[in-house]
Length: 219
Ligand SMILES: [Zn+2]
Figure 1: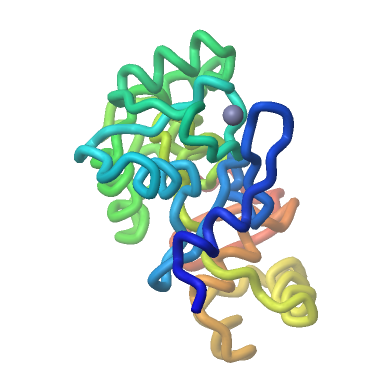
Figure 2: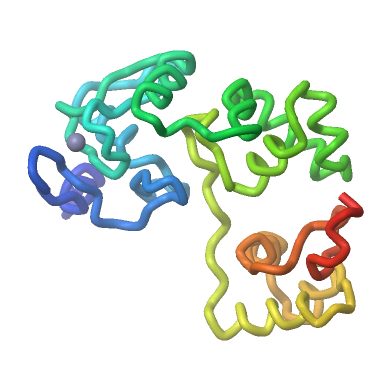
């Protein structure tokens, strides 16, 4: 029987000095390893297998600046501040106004998501957390998550035939609510939101209501 650890290491292949994750990846190119029903960042799992538990709040950083690398020799532990400094040193920090995202913590993001789910606008959340609108928009929409070091696990991708239907339902200009589309297609909220987030030309206007980009100003 294959152990979880064997399954893990079999998913990586040597490329130069690095041991590169061959499985699926998070948006930010970090490897994604599914275990116990959830997605974990592969480099963190690699650290745990090779060196043991990661202290609470610690980040697993790459000396090789190669996010999908899971070679334990290339990994080191650091704080959130180290992670920020490391990214700046390697030129991976968010640019311009988005750079204010660097001050967001995991707690901030949990709060932001809760506020968003409760119907707050990006502007209201930004004001509450003391960051720019652009920062909170980007953070909540997966554009930049670099301030966190941990990518948000994405909901499962909708099957491709369903994706087209969902997308056309949202994009037909009627401003359907996610609830309507979900009822119509019998899909989960996660799948509906995932499609919306990944469909160009559709923007979030208000909680649960989506419309084409022309009405973007409402946010
Ligand atoms: Zn490496």
